[in-house]
Amino acid sequence: MVRAGKILVYLLCSLSAVIAIMEIVLRLVFAGLPTIPFFYQETGIPSLYQNDNVLVSFPDRPPVRYKTNSMGARIHETADPDAAPSSGTLVIGDSQALGYGLDFEDTFGFRVHQRLFQDNGVRIFASPSTDMELLSNAVCGGALTNEMSAALMVVVVNLGNDLDEIYLGGRTRRGTASSGLHRFLLRHSRIYMRLAIARSRGILMTHALPGVNPILYNLTAAERVTLADEMVRHIQAVLACGPEAAQKIVVLMPSDFQVDPDELLKYGPFSNDPRMFEDWAGRRAALAQMMNALERYIAARLSVEGLSVVSFRALVLDRALDSAGVFERSSHHITRLGHEILAAEIIGQLQNGE
Image 1 (cartoon, rainbow, N blue to C red):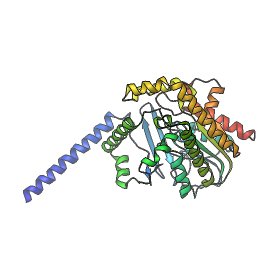
Image 2 (image 1 turned 30 degrees about the horizontal axis):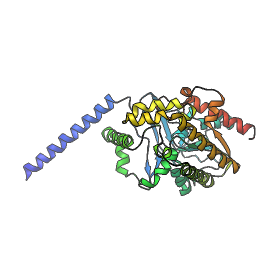
Image 3 (image 1 turned 45 degrees about the vertical axis):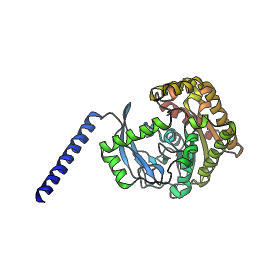
Image 4 (image 1 turned 90 degrees about the horizontal axis):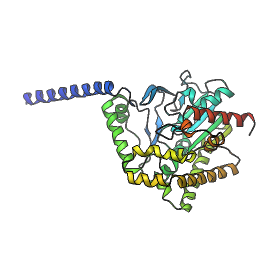
């Protein structure tokens, strides 16, 4: 019995040593890859870690710092996470609003607030992997109850994938929270993190094609309108449940190929089904027109209610800008220039009293 116990202890020590070595090797070999997941699922709603201050590394750019307050909203590096400003700018959305891979100073929310208020009262309540349905659940569930009363609230609607995600919402396990152990291992174990990333990529490759909304494109015209109406309903809920704001603006963020249909081609390397991708690519102009029609419909619904609506697609096209300059090379995220253009438009509208 004693001998068996010694063997067990030896095996556990050996296993621990192997894991420790693997953790060290992963930190050395994959130093340039994404290594710190900075968001997690809380009651099924993706969120940034609360009261966090972490340097996140990306594969194609220098590390970016993400600092948050007690609500999990992204704030400036110099901002006090415990401060509760009586007024300020509140941005609500997904990774587009968050400034994925960008310094806080490069986000449109910071640019707008600095021009209008010149202080650190900017809060970006946003996270990757979320959509307007999840955001409406979070905001109406009291996530921003203790937040500031905003001088400006901007809601960013990502047409690039939100419509599909809302449609798929009924088939996914929403309302399931990540365990404390899961969150701890994601943050502190490179082995666990790499396994989680690999699993997510596997699910993505078998269920969806990056850059393409397969569900949306296979619906009938009437079903698309119904889905757009559902999107409008969730936008209205976010605006109604969010803090009081003197100014409210809705930004419609397009699919990148709405600006230039050829943007769809950059997603080819991510597809595990070349034939299916070629089918989508061959119809990219028609798909862009369909998405444009849906965007105009959503904008009209919101404008009727007296809301200020900004179309990022229209901004880029009106300025005759190259899509490659405003969208990332391998994703639909807008670049630093894209945030700059969006900020200038919002500032212009507010200063002109539109």
